[in-house]
Length: 524
Ligand SMILES: Nc1nc2c(c(=O)[nH]1)N[C@H]1C(S)=C(S)[C@@H](COP(=O)(O)O)O[C@H]1N2
Ligand SMILES: [Mo]
Image 1 (tube, rainbow, N blue to C red):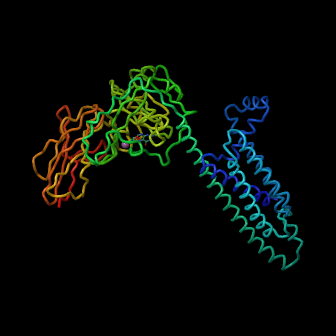
Image 2 (cartoon, protein in one colour):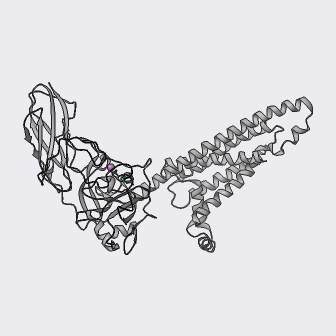
Image 3 (cartoon, rainbow, N blue to C red):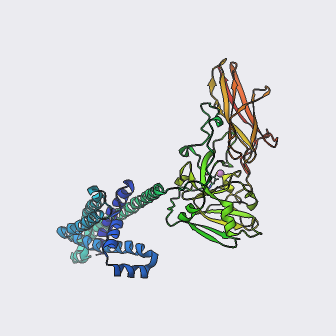
């Protein structure tokens, strides 16, 4: 009996898993279990619905799906028994009824056409094939064509024949169990992948539906003059698809905005909870800000500039009422990551609870639905993505994620400059004019001078692109006519406080890389 039941349940599992996978792969296709659940919700009398909501509260959907699965499992048991007894007509009818029910349900509510029945029909077909296969294997393992009849048949057989028969059957039972376990495990894996893909798609669709409010204070337009017009020096605003991504997440968290909230907690007079809608309703400002990773090597590309849309963090915290003993603002992510910076950093600079990046809702990779961006600080102490909580605390009571792992408690972005053109190892034409160009940043002051040294010559002042703001990088370029041979190029920036970058190279840990970006090129 148990083997027959197992056959039915595992066959149903395989069918449902294939449907989940299809629903994950094709946006318009939906999981049969979910569509059936939807139809039940549509068809059930209001009184029953009210009772369900009263009894199960917000878990009513979970209960509904669980209930659907229990019914499927019960019928699957029965179908398995029929199949193992060779009552194929009944078995096929059972499988068919479910495929048809799923198909019919998928034609209901918001259907966009007849192809939507595909997951249910495929589920039915896969179930049928697996059922046939496992039932046949079970029948040969249990002999007498009927595993539901337990061992009575074999026990009746006398002497030697019975013994060898039993050995043979023990063997094929092991094989049956192995195959069944394999099919079950594969189904769970396939179904899991399908659910995961569906979740991704759901958040993508939700994100596409978001209409961002306009900013009460837009970012000043980017003048053409910010660009030095050299090919190979990136655009001043980094396109989102090219923007560096750094985080500890193995898979990008898919956070839906619908049931997401942002809480302001800890050492505040009035803890706050905002829904996504409430967050969007706050006055939004837009600012172009360059953000960088502390792990950016000298010359590295873990830096980018975007137009960030968000509400002011200082306003939000003022509303919550930061208590005087709080000295740290900690962003907490839904994935458990934390990053903290001094409350003193909120000195009027445009620290934002960001919802938009370059005119669109944040992408999942960059923190949808919301993240922090604090000009002047490395991401690891400030730029929490998939933000769920802003916690006011003290440095002597809380350390952000990277601090116990050996990184500095405070992470102001160091002044740096980078040569983008030519690239290290490039060969350039000797005797022809070629530009040397790149970007430089000083995140709270301004870059006032960039100098380039060719081999051991004099430092030459580069032409600077127009300054945009003191929280964005600045492009620079110098024209150069190389002699034939190998050359070493170096760059250094000076900020408005008169500080020139140190030549002393340091590792990225614990507080960011120092030193001059130096490359070698060949002119011939
Ligand atoms: N939830 C979460 N947020 C995070 C991180 C993380 O690991 N998890 N990494 C931070 C670091 S180290 C950096 S440099 C920035 C990078 O932001 P980006 O991926 O949007 O460029 O995100 C910050 N926010
Ligand atoms: Mo970082």
